[in-house]
Image (cartoon, rainbow, N blue to C red; front, side, top):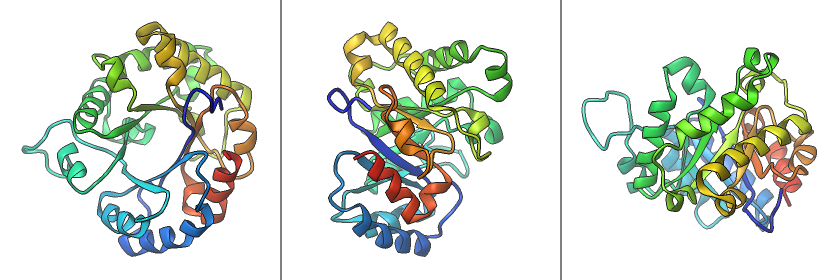
Length: 255
């Protein structure tokens, strides 16, 4: 982390977990555990139906609640989707876009990720933009090319001003839900590649100010070592975000 230049963000992605009552109970449990730990922003991205309950429980705390996805149109015949306008009206501040599971299971492409990112930014939300390589790409030695191209495509047409509200989460797809984790050195190298690509697009100042998280089985055991790397500015946490003690340990590592 380089806290002199950019803000550390520890974000939990609950995925398809926690009903509204479970979300409320979890937030009530973890609130006192993370109170006063203000050296990083703390975010939980919740399923749509649990957002309101989580937000109500988080009132008055240092916890922010986000959404796990957003559609790129304001309204229309898009059954099952939720617009940025809808999320903004209920007070959502953060939204995940382009998570590997959305790309793998639901047909997300860099084009739709770019459109969703633009829609969320236009609504005044902060975007956690996810990207990363699959195992075959890592083994083929083309990780840098893959994440560089994703960065360029996903940020296409986004202004340097709007970029201030974008966080990039580097999550190697082969480490999502597998228990595998990139080594701290691999995480640092790839986050640095992303930062160099951002610099080529927007300039050094914008790149140095950008928060780049590591996602991919970050947990209470490996967080400190990962967060010690210069270009790793936080974490996008999956399984460990469902256990208050484990998530709090990650927040502590970021302090």
